[in-house]
Length: 256
Image (cartoon, rainbow, N blue to C red):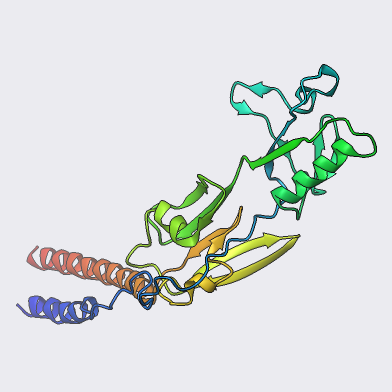
């Protein structure tokens, strides 16, 4: 009987440890008011980075074989249009035009450089059109989301809300107010923080993502406390199991 009371006395602290007030979970854009018709949507052109894979297609209206655009385009493979990889020096090696520096340029700027090479020092193509696309655009999201991992960007534009949505949303234990974005640009690494509940979200330079961004959703203090409480409960439960087993063994020995 005394042993039973002893176990009950141990159980009371466990009960109070497990009981905790529920904390309000902030909503996305919670502090954003109706702003219909206000603010301009500004999306900067993506800058080409090392290890980007680019599709470069050149077209001309000329029908003359000697100025055909065919020789300036890579053949289409079974998996689609072949691409040019931006190397560690920031260059692409075009099979006809040679080495072209691409890092730090936008698609339009690189297209302008290619057009220039088609006209100077000798014009090899009349009024060419150059189309450039990213073939391996992706971002990575980690932490308290539904699905961690790399996300292939379906177009060439994605914002942080879309990325979170594609990752299955932020869990109840994830911080919506302090999302970390790690970005590399021109050989420099920078880290920014984004509050998904703030009215200033759309003004953040990290709202619109760029290729190879890493988004990290940290755990809330509630999650950390629960993890620590679970560890404490496991230790206490293990200790109670040992006490119970020892008491049972002692009773057996006493009776014998």
